[in-house]
Image (cartoon, rainbow, N blue to C red; front, side):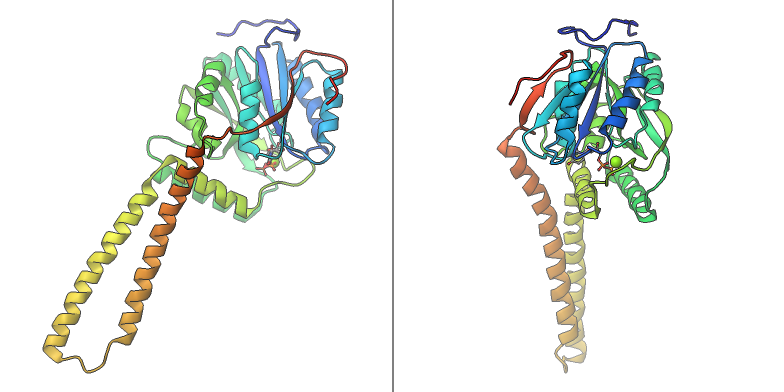
Length: 332
Ligand code: UDP
Ligand code: MG
């Protein structure tokens, strides 16, 4: 069990808790976020730091983070060299989190209320390695987004194998140091974080909360990105689509065999007065379609193999200022 240390964040000493916050163009909310987070974290009674990952923001976010860092010693900033996407930003934050005991992942837009963190910490103190915040409601989200999300979780539940994705769970969670260390060993480029979290295992507990609508700014998600994310989730955790392609191929081949037999028998018995243009067309189109779908499925996997084999780093750090230092920052 973690010892309750009340020491302040001092230079060189690793804090007990790290809070990792990916931030991409969050200038409108970052100060309010830091204020609420600070109030909550100071009340926990453990030393802490917050690692902001500036994911190549093009608004005032970097300046605001630098200003925060000048006044609060708990603030660490990792600035990526460009926008790498949330999953990479999160990984960068986890890589740079120095906490000895546990790490909390939270969005900057206040959709994940920092006030839930003490409950996550309480679950961790009870001995759970992972405490994930589970949404009770999805206020401010459209009906279609809720429906597509639920369909996705059902599909993943069916084909995901032994890795179970908890429904209505985002990245907002607390993980013990050993869970994070395990997670960081998974260096795949196609990072479906929800799946990676689940893959790691360890005793986990859900903490229900009400998800707020975005405090300000706009979501960076659209249906294109959600589609990509779902594909990511499916292709990096299961090869079921490849098997489906095989069955589809076998199924159409069997159907074609029967149909071919029937055509021959029919021609022998009744002759073949009219050349079967409609049926010919149907079969050609059907087979063409099936082949293209199957090729597409193979292509999805092949593309991912291609990306993985390049072995590129997941992100590039432009600048890293760890927590625990007051005063002005070295100029770029
Ligand atoms: N984010 C990021 N890089 C991106 C997109 C988003 O670091 O390319 C961060 C963003 O600043 C926020 C979190 O990831 O803290 C969640 O993003 P968003 O609110 O847009 O997603 P949603 O809550 O709609 O799923
Ligand atoms: Mg959000």
